[in-house]
Length: 377
Figure 1 (spheres, one colour):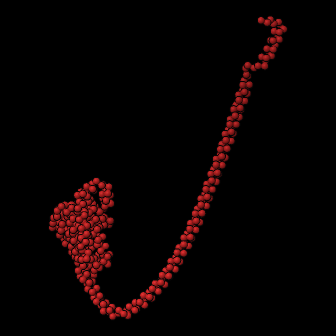
Figure 2 (cartoon, helix red, strand yellow):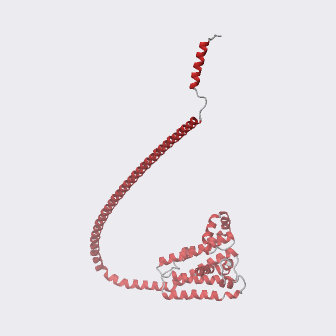
Figure 3 (cartoon, one colour):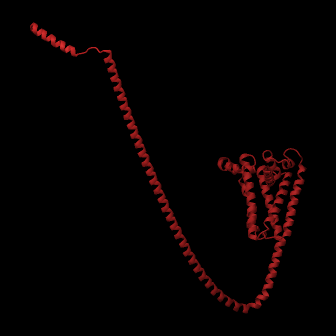
């Protein structure tokens, strides 16, 4: 260990005092307050710088957002302009196409007009030649025609009188018997028997046959024939529909539920197929009158245009049949399910089955139409 003398010790002590005098180990209150104030100012300055930095960033974001919006608006504007240009171009093209089409149509019309003029000229020339030949033939055959024409006119008049005298009667009988046959087939297919109440369906369809005979005597033969066949097909189809629906579901189809009933027949295939197997012969028999008329009776039963006297007779006969049927309803009593109750107290929701059995398909259909008309009022 080194030995120090007094001078060195004093010197070392003096240096230590100098060093310790420069070091302050403790702060005075003023120094501490000043230090805290400086630190507070530094924090505030730091917060201010942070706020300014955040504001600058937000400003930059707003500027970027505005720039993006401007760019989007410019893009949308450019798209609108392009779309408008495309629409204008399409309109110009459509206008050009219309003009071309009009021009083609005008050219075609001109060609057709020229062709028509050429045909007219050709027809005039042919007509002139034909007139010349006809004049020559007329001069040769004039005597023969003068003798034959009165005979042909008399024969045509006799044939027309014969048709007016016989054929309308055959037509109305055919219509009445056809409707009666359809009602009979419908009744037998459902109930397998006929009782005395079947008189009412017969009278009602007889009136319907008279009315149909009037309708099919208003026009020429071909139109009358088409109307007659159409009416029989419609009524036969309605009867077939009722037969099939009754065999499938056990009741008649209401006129107001026609659409839903047909939908059920289309979608319930298993039930409809099994029902069809049981009533198929009756469905086929419904078109028997039309088949017999087409095969055997077309020459005898002709739906010629009749006169007003025949139509009045048929109308009177139809009215008489309906009135007789209504007046005779009370013969079978007034109990529930009787023809009288079914007619005068008809309700398609309650006694449709009894009405179909007692009054027939036509009577029930007419009563349903009357019920629907009264409900509208």
